[in-house]
Length: 258
Image (cartoon, helix red, strand yellow):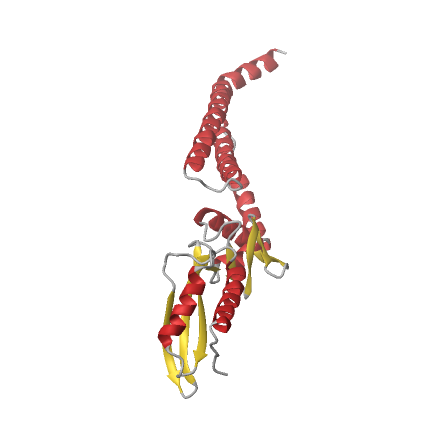
């Protein structure tokens, strides 16, 4: 018993202060990590980072800090970390090779949510598909096409390819070209078309609508009509504009060149 007491006392004298210091470090470290997590969350909210990304970023930062804290505590206690670090490194390399595609989508998703090349509700053209973005997640993005198909894009495809955001600017210009015979005065034609477009409430007043001649050939002169509409509902407005122009031309007794 005396030997047991002596060994216990020696252990307490040798390792007791280290254990107490490690315990204090662990408790204080957890408190600091919680405060840091709240601070990061406030900064992300202030910078208007996507709500679906904030918990992931704060959670990831907190996890990394907790792992570092655990290493620091083990180092203070006197635990050798060489073998442990080697095992963690080997596991990380193996996991990275096995999940390379998934990690690429994961990284691309974070970049999309941070840089915001498009948002949910935007109309985009990507990978020869045109539609409305309905959902953006860490690994994939869902787009509903205008003919009601659901297209699921891995985020790596969207971050490494060209994306056309059709609705980011809030308005779009429609270009319509029609050919008319030379015996039709252009001033009369221009007046008819501009009057019809100005009466259409879906056509924006600014930028102004333009009607002009862009080319001439043996069949007649070609007229270009440039009108602006809101980005959302562009296709519907374009069809309506065609109907309005055709009706105005027909009512004015004007015939187009075949």
